[in-house]
Length: 252
Image (cartoon, rainbow, N blue to C red; front, side, top):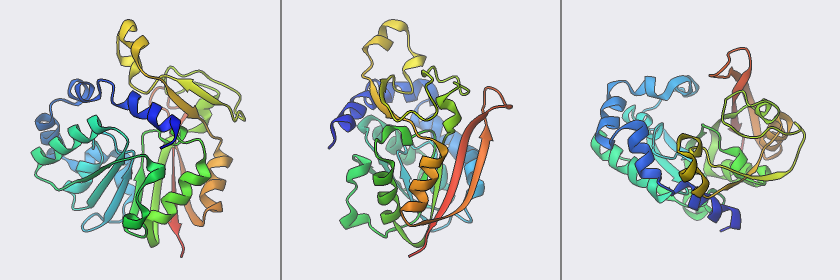
């Protein structure tokens, strides 16, 4: 496992289970919410799926199962890949409470067992800002391509690269030159929700933030056919870009 992956694992296992309970409720409480309206819990991402029943989905960096469990409730066969054992614990307890089956692999995404999972999935799905955790976006996209069946679809939603030059999502992350290729050390996503003393103890993450052209060229350059690219407004200021979704298909 790469050194920075070990760094990320420590960050995402720091008080993570307790954080999800505070943020989302107990697994039983979260499950009731998911069961109540799974499509609503998927938010805009539901519209990128043609159907759900029987679809094999790889949920990349699927965290606490916040999208995986609604997908499973809608009939998808979901495997979460994530680096955090605490995330797995919350997700699996929530899945049990929701009475759905969920597979969960705790691993470095760049070390997914392709002997087991190559060509296995109909859809590879990610959301919530994950690309910046990987220092080589080409390597990342090669693995996404390998996971899919021929004709399979990748749904890649992430923070808009505009956030490199303006903190439009209010994530409390430093801004930089849009074209910077620097790898920076910074707080993990949840640190800002803690008091200052706890915040100081949080393990740091190692980030590489990409431009739109770097993301699109990595998708196209690794064999995908890009079908759609949508930009979404910031949840803090609807006049500014906050997120994007790229949809691409494995052609071979």
